[in-house]
Amino acid sequence: MTTSPPKPGERVADVRFDDDTMSVDLADGRTITVPLAWYPRLLAATPEQRRHWEPCGGGFGIHWPEIDEDLSTQGLLEGAPAPRRPEVAKP
Image (cartoon, rainbow, N blue to C red; front, side, top):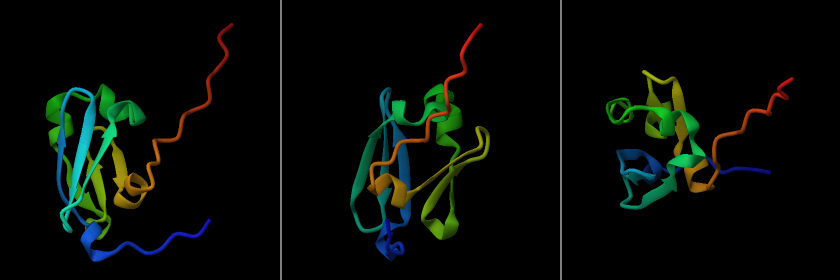
């Protein structure tokens, strides 16, 4: 699968949350809204930790330093949830 390079309008302008979703405003005026359930670290984070984000990757990514989570606008635009860790069988 090939991906195209990010476009200037795909830079992050703002990030906000409600109880179940995250919305990311892009510089070109689009808003991407995704379920928090797709991102377990963000789902488990406190509202204050979620609000403490910073742009990364030249503005094409979002970093939450307190929970060590990073997302890209490209992944959000592609509708890509966080990779799931394999289940460990319990004895």
